[in-house]
Length: 174
Image 1 (cartoon, one colour):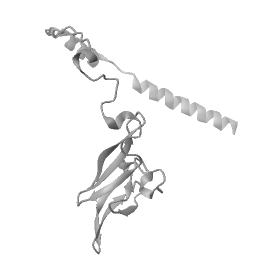
Image 2 (cartoon, rainbow, N blue to C red):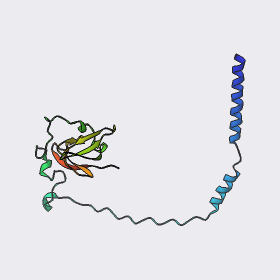
Image 3 (cartoon, rainbow, N blue to C red):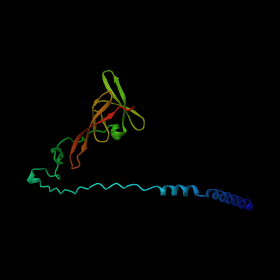
Image 4 (tube, rainbow, N blue to C red):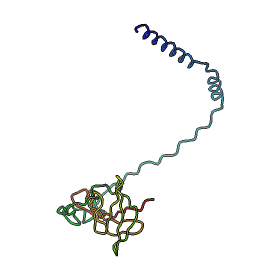
């Protein structure tokens, strides 16, 4: 058994040596091509574009009556509770567990006089929604359902303690 193992090693080594010897070859064609490219005449280099000098701007908010860029410009963005706020007492709906961009509208459905929007989640399940239901992770409330999209108003943080409303939509996918 030991001799057959050694024989196998020899066979593998011979095959490897043959394989590596096949990789070698002349590079005459490559050398000719490189020499041909080097023999070409050089081209003209374009001039560099002219660089305009930087103009210094002195910002004096009080003297010119401008708003300081370090203060919020909207009354909603003061962070003092002005504007819309998410309802923390409201129980969450199932579709609020998904980011809005992962939800797809796949159609509409009429039952009696009620128009439903059909929303598909990433796992392939389809859910019925009506205006007033919530979608997405930003307290998005459905305001309108049309044949081509579901309109949503989200409540998002303004970054300094307050909230603002933002319009979004889930469009009909092909």
